[in-house]
Length: 215
Image (tube, rainbow, N blue to C red; front, side, top):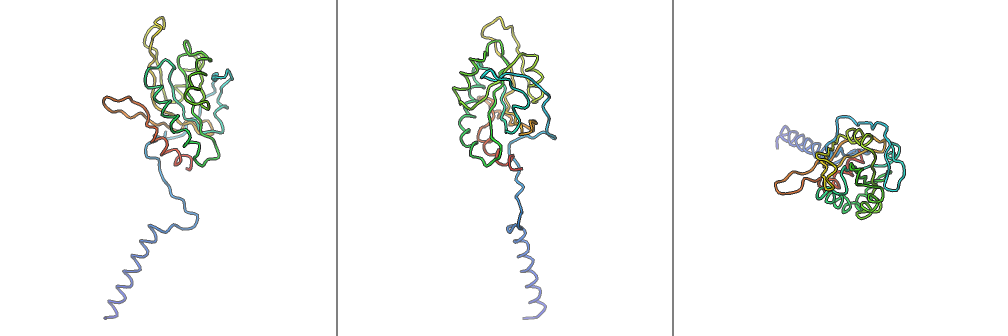
């Protein structure tokens, strides 16, 4: 075989080997930069402004209560007929798997009641305990709740008179994620499909949380 051909074949083989190596053989210390598939991160982490609320055990709940943990936060109310109980049940279903994620900081679920007139501390305690005794429920007066919820990037509104005992509360259905520095970093938005409840997909949360925590 012509020497020039031999050299050309050898060079081609070396080039192919180099490409394969670059694609499949990671150098020591290399970490794959996976990205969340469903989580919608904010352009910059949003520091929470100081707030004072109360948890379902009558303890003060402030910004420091969110430090040192990952918090999946959902806004709603206990009289909610559909989205709230469904979302809470979905979060409970994946909670054992969330606890198995390799992390120095625990993952917690926080339910924010925006209906303080009907959601007493005892009712909140009974409500979250029904889903999971490790879940946290918080509430407070509207003057504290509204800026806190807005700071999360969420909203709520009572569109009718509360004289009606069966009044409804409009509220965001996303699940917001707060990092261990008490910063809002993004949210899992509800899936919108005709004829189905608009709730955040728990399996999407479960799939993305290990990636988010490892970043």
